[in-house]
Image (cartoon, rainbow, N blue to C red; front, side, top):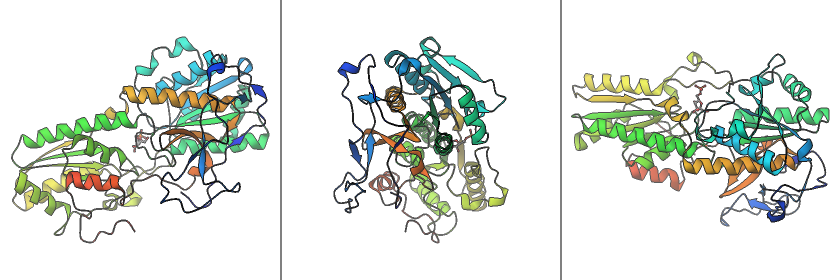
Length: 441
Ligand code: F6P
C-alpha cells in the first residue's frame, strides 16, 4: 500500500432518494461504512488507522438503500478503452441490463472507440437497450470499439455535458482509469452532477488494488494451451526448444499463471525478474543443461521481460503513452538459435507468439459471471452518485477504489511471495538467472 494513500470515495452529494429498484425490497443493502480490510492477515497489520481510527480498507460495493439519481430521469454513457480483453461485451451488457430493468434508466448511450468517441466532432454514439446487448456477452472484443489515447479532458467533459449525461462508465485499464480521474476532477471543478465509474479491464491483471481483473482468467487458460502446444512441439524433435511469448508489459501474471496451469514449462521469464543470457548461471547454460538431461525445454517469456537487451531510445510509444516493449520473443529465438549453432549443439526451436489471439477470445464462464457482478456493482455505485472510483476486488469482495489511488502505482508479481516461489518450484528454475543479476531488494 502506498504511503498516505486514501481509500475514501467521493460522491456528488447526499443520497436522499429511496432505492426503489425492481428488486429493492429483497436487496441486502450495503452501507458506506462497511469495509473490506486492506490487510487480511493480522501479522501484516501494523496498527495503521485512518482519521476515524479504523484500519485501512475499501468501501464494499453493492446496492445502497438511498441513492442519488432517479432512474427514470437518468442518462448514462458507456465506453471501452485500451487493448481488447475477454469480457468487455459482458460488462457492457451487465450495465445496460441493470440500469434498464432494475433502475428503469432507459437512456443509455454507447460511446464508440473509447475516449476518442468523446471528441468534439465525433458522432460515434449509439443508443443501447436490452435488444442491442442481448447476445453480446458471448462474443470476444467490444461491440463499442476501443482506442488508445484521448482528446483533452475539457473537450470530453463538454461532450458529456452536451449529451446531458448523468453517469459515465469507463471500462478500461490503469491508463484509462487515470483518464477517468481527470474527467472526474473536471466534473467537480465545473460543479456538474455526473457520476464517473470505472470497471478495471486488462488481461495483464496489473491494476493496483484489484486482485483480479475480468478477462484475465480466460487469458490464462488460453495462454496455458499455447504453453502445452510448445511442450508438444519441443518433445517432437531432438533437443527441442519450445519458446512462447505472452503479453504482460510490466507484470508477469499471465505468464506465471499460464506456466502453473500448464505445468509444462522449464523457464518463466517475467518483467519483475531480470535475467542474463551468458555466464555459468545464465539462460544459455541453464537451457543446455536441461536439454542434456531431458532433451527438451519449454521457455515462456512475458513481452516486458528482458527489456535491458533493448536500447530505450529505439522503442516507440503507443497512443496511450506506454513504451512498446522490444520484441523479447523474437530476440530470444534468434539469440538461442545463434548460440547453439555457435557452440555446435544443434537444437530445434519452435517459437509461438499468440498475442492478439488470446486477447480477442470470448470470456469463459467464470469471467462471464464475474463481468456480470462487476457491471451490476458499477450500476449501483453510479446510482448512488459516487464518482472518481472503480470497482475493485479485494480478498474476494467487490469494493470501491478511488481512481486517485492508482497514481504512481504498478501491480507486479512479488518475487518474495508464495506465488512466485510456486512458479520457481514448478519450473525448477533458479531464483536468479545470470550471475550479475540482482533481484528484489
Ligand atoms: O492492455 C494491455 C495489453 O494487452 C498489454 O499486455 C499489451 O502490451 C498491450 O495491451 C498491447 O496493446 P496494443 O498492441 O493493442 O496497443
